[in-house]
Length: 59
Figure (cartoon, rainbow, N blue to C red):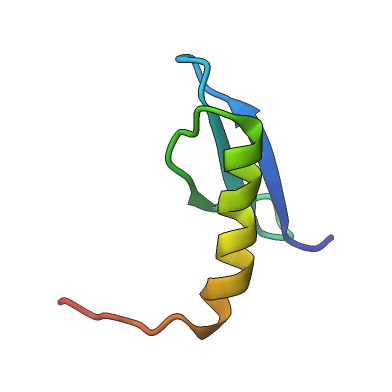
């Protein structure tokens, strides 16, 4: 089983996504979006930008 994005509506009626690892564990979750299209755009942004993201260790 590979990682997947899930889109869902929260209690406030906003669209959100979560990224689940292959084992089903949630490894990322989004802010709330007012439309499904905006949520899908958020997923596209993560897919495009996360691969090159740097690590900012503030410990």
